[in-house]
Image (cartoon, rainbow, N blue to C red; front, side, top):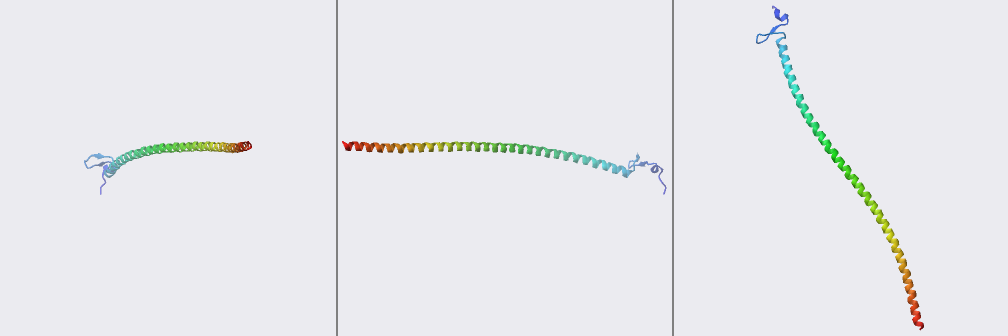
Length: 132
C-alpha cells in the first residue's frame, strides 16, 4: 500500500477536490462543533432572556410584598395608636366616674342633712303649734 505523499505532508483533497490542510473528518467535526456552539450560544441567549424576565418578575413581586408589608406595619401602628387613645379615654372616663361618685356621695350626705334639718324644723313647727 503506497502512502499518499500529499497526506504525509498534511494536505488532503475534499469532496469538491479542493486542497485542504485538515483531514476531511476533522474538518467535518470542526464544522459540526461550530454549529453546536452556535446552537449552544443561541440557547444561552434564550436562557438569559428567560432568566432576565424571571428576575424582573421576582423583583416586581418583592416590591409588591414590601409595599404590602409597609401597609401592614402602618395598619398595626395605627391600631396600636387607636388602642392607646381608647385606653387614655377609658382612664379619663374612669376618673370622671370616680369624681361623679364622690359628688353623688356629697349630694347624698347634704340631702340627708337637709332631711334632718327639715324633720327638726317640722318637729319644731309642730311643737310650736301645739303650744299655742
